[in-house]
Image 1 (tube, helix red, strand yellow):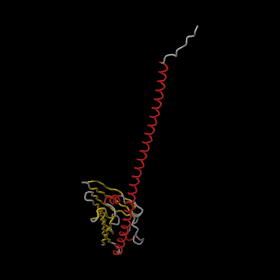
Image 2 (image 1 turned 120 degrees about the vertical axis):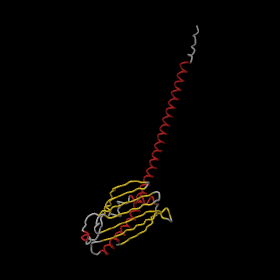
Image 3 (image 1 turned 30 degrees about the horizontal axis):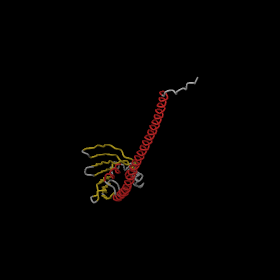
Length: 231
């Protein structure tokens, strides 16, 4: 049996890291993870509980596959709890495939860094046990090395997802500003059009009123005096 433990600090707040953890797969840095399927998801007492089936492809050397008698994708059950009140996310994963010979249990925790609340401390621990096949010690070391390599890729993937989320937020903000500017421009144009139309209407009204007044004066004015011819 091998026990592997790792610690890492993300330079991001806990809320940001948790969002990235929930959207971690798929990503180009962990191509071995083929997909995830949600089996159950619920909220109880403000805590988000999730159960997912993770499909992955363990790329062992070709000489190992006959020992386990397994080909194709591997499956694992993942249970997670997100507690926003105490700001902690716990993810527990246990392999389903190769269960006759291989047992891998992993626990991952995300909590704010005690020394800096704007950072997030990641703690990972995996327990690896192999039985019923030859070369157990070598296989456990190889599997431990694989888990460590995947963990490094996983941390890089988290940074990739965080950058993606930040880019999406920036795009939304830019789009919102552009939409606001377009709306203000359209509103100003409509106001200008309305103002110009109103001004033209007032000018036309004043012209018509002046013409009506002139016509009225012409109608009410006395006729011009006529001279009487002398006899």
